[in-house]
Structure formats: structure tokens, C-alpha cells
Length: 442
Ligand code: NAD
Image 1 (tube, rainbow, N blue to C red):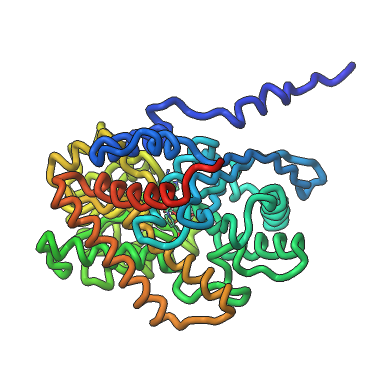
Image 2 (cartoon, protein in one colour; image 1 turned 180 degrees about the horizontal axis):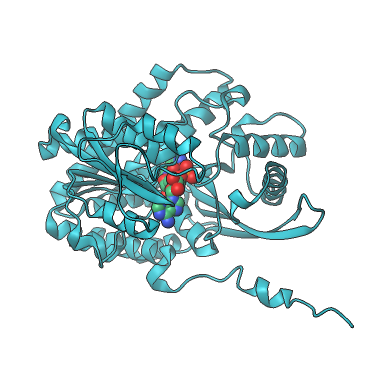
């Protein structure tokens, strides 16, 4: 009897498909662009250019698995705009990654590098994979093959990848090495977020949250919030979330709740972020849940994450995934300040509701721009073959973030527009000015 064939083609057909508009970040990114374009009366020619990415590369990544079989993954690298300099943006490994998500993230990178005024455009990469289901060897082969597949369009002067969700220094070292093998010489400037030993920067690990801290310091000043009497909740406990919790705690705030993909915890007297991290690292399921001295927000991880967002806190920091603050829960949000460590956590409808309610928003393209800013510092150091100490990095980062916050806040006040639209206005204006100077070729 012949074995029944698995319809592989049919199974792979869904791999590259994108979700419907309501839950598709690319639509959110385009609606944000439309809203800002309307507010600033953007020239429609440039609006059209910005509403499409400059280049989208979809790649096949065949990986020899440990059991000898071959698995095929799908990956993308999207370059949205390079008017202000080489493209820049992280690489995400997640089972939910799709082409449109990578496009949205690439567009947000264009705005982010422009808001903090570093000489880059915007890009993003992603692989649709659950990295936790792969061994280290499989992950290395996946990463190196992906790096090879995108190597024709990346480079120190072209497009410089960095870490994002579920990628870190280890993956960046593999990418740096793969690219260096291809070109025939060590090229530390091709990727940022590397380990210190291969040209990483001091302070890159904490950079996103450190930058967020500097913007929060500015925001609580204008809101007259005393950090020593303030409370905070953080959704997501990875690189951005853990450090954000730690730095809010350092400012004197009580971090009363944190969460991750497995659950969330609450203690009205405040949590010790380092103790929570130690618990997460040694727990069987690598989660913050069941932390001694705190109550679980809910048995169900999704419900726990939903409850965290609606807690009565002063500062709310979404630091996990997109589309968590929507028209369905925005009205129940009690925080006075939202600082978006994650990219795209708030939908455009929710933005309007929050603005109406008087919640001050530090939008993602400003709040989490510390990561790309220190990536820029790392790239500069790599190119000059010189290394700065942590104090130098922090001082330069504070200067960039404080200036960017003040620029966005003044525009928000002056034009009576929400903070996201103000940040976009500032960014789009800078990108369009560069495009106008360079012209459209031919
Ligand atoms: P990470 O992989 O270190 O951590 C992700 C965290 O989110 C984990 O704690 C995970 O458990 C949690 N999570 C995943 N799915 C979740 C879900 N459905 N509900 C609740 N929690 C969930 O990633 P990261 O680097 O900290 O990135 C987090 C966010 O910050 C992303 O949106 C990313 O784009 C953004 N960001 C990160 C950086 C950076 O430098 N790391 C820079 C800018 C923006």
C-alpha cells in the first residue's frame, strides 16, 4: 500500500498569508501615516511614496534539523525608506510573523530614526518560526542561512540589522560572522546589538528601556507626577520589559504588576524587578507567574495580560507585542501616562480614545528609540574602531532622547495634536525634506 502524501503545497500556502485589516499592523501604520499627513497637509506625491516600502525581500530558509530532516521557514527583510541614510531595523523570530507585520515595523523604523535624528532610514526583518522549539544548532543554521539569503541587500552602508523579539547578541554574532565570511573580512558594522567581544557597545542591552526612562522622566515632569509616589505596570518581561521595570523602580516608582506570554503578577506594595527576573529564569516554564509574594493576575495568560493593562497605575508600559490597546479596552485604561516600549501596541481607534481621555502617550517611535540610538552609537564605534564607556553612551543617549521628547511635546502643544501624530509629523517632515533634496531619480 502506498503511503498517503501530505498536501505540503496547501500547508505552505498559508505560510505567507497576511491577516485581515483589523488585526494587521501594516494597516495601522498606514492609518497613522494618513492621520499625520492630513494634520501636516503632506504633499500627496510624497505621501504615496511613503505609503509603500522601497524594497521587500521574501526568502526561503531551508534548515537541516537535528533529526536529519529538512524544514523550510519563510523570512523577510523589508526596507521602507533610505532617504536619510542606510536602512536600519531589527530581526524578529516569532511564529506570528508575516510580511505585513515586517512592513509595518520597517515603516515605524523610518519614523523612529527620524524622530531621534540619527542618519538612518527604516528596515525590519523577520522569520516565521517558534525559536523555542528549535535546538541551538538548528537556530544557528536558521540564522546563518537567513543572513546569507538577505546578504545581497544588507551591509554597513546599505542596511544594518539588529535584535528584536526573540533574537539577541548571539544571533547578531552569527549574522556578523556569516556576512564577514561572505565578504572575506570581519565587518562588525553590518549588524548591531552584538556581544561586546565582537564589537558590541556598552549599554546596548539596556538601551531601549534606558531611552524610555529618559522620556518618562520628561513626561512625568510635565504631568507633575512625583516618581516616589507613582506606580507602574509593565506588560512583557523580555529585554525591553525587564529593563523598563528595573529603571522605573530605580526612579522610585512602585512597579506593581508585570507579565509575560505565560501570565502576569501583581503586588500593590511593589515588586523587585531583579527578584522577578531571577524567579523567571529559574522557573520551569520561564515565566514571572507564581512569583512568591505576588498574586497571579489570572490563571489564564491572555486574561492576566488584559487585566494588567487596566490596572489603576500612573504609568503603563506595554513592552510585548502589537495591538494590545484597542477600542475595546482603551476606555478602561486608568494610567495617566503610557510609554510604549513595544512597537505598535496601540491601535489608531484606541489612540483617539486615549487622547480624548487626556492620557499622555509617549508613542513607540519615540519611547523605544533608545535601542536604535545606541545601535547607531555601536555602528559609529565599529566604523571608527573605537570603544566608548557606559557613561559616555548614557550621556549621549540622554541628550538624544530628551531633545526628541521636547521636540515632539512642543509640536503636540503647539498644534493641539496627539503625541503620536506630533512624533510622526516631525519624522515625516525630516524624511520628506531629505527626499526633496535628493530628488526622484531618474
Ligand atoms: P523579548 O523577546 O526580549 O521579550 C518579549 C517579551 O514579550 C517576553 O517576556 C514574552 O514572554 C512577552 N510576550 C510575547 N508574547 C506575548 C503575549 N502575547 N502577551 C504578553 N507577553 C508576551 O523582546 P523585546 O526585545 O523585549 O521586545 C519587546 C517589544 O519591544 C517588541 O514590540 C519590540 O519590537 C520592542 N522593541 C524592542 C527593542 C529592543 O531593543 N529589544 C527596541 C525597540 C522596540
